[in-house]
Image (cartoon, rainbow, N blue to C red; front, side, top):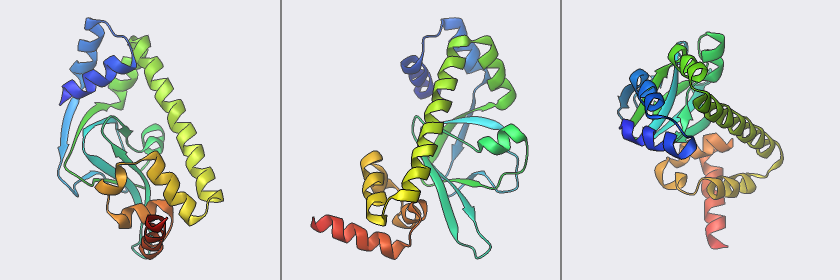
Length: 192
């Protein structure tokens, strides 16, 4: 499993053998079964987490019991609750596995240490954070300006493999619509 993360690092940055070994020495391997939690609301998130296999969702549950999906994360993506991690406060989110999932975790203290010790690793992390910020801005803009159909078409265009891996009810929640609306839109777009 760590080999997948190693390959990711090799694609994203150049590290010496000693730097690669240093990073691996701090890695924690974690496996989740489908529907198993990585993080539960109220717990403090303490890791930087990379997915080597599977898919997770980050979501909240409102007072009526309705789930609101904030995001999905798949292979070669990072996941977690950045606010809880940085502020060391209880998370508002749940993160659970949609599929059997495997991750490489680093305690945040060790992750920060690696960033200080290995400039190339730190540069990679900063680039990832910048892309994440841009993705969040784009998601907010899309949710404010696009029609329901445009949101769905944008989603399947950006994430073509998600529709076959993620239950439609979760996709509807992510897009801010009812499952019935999503079903109607899918039927309409299939006819075009």
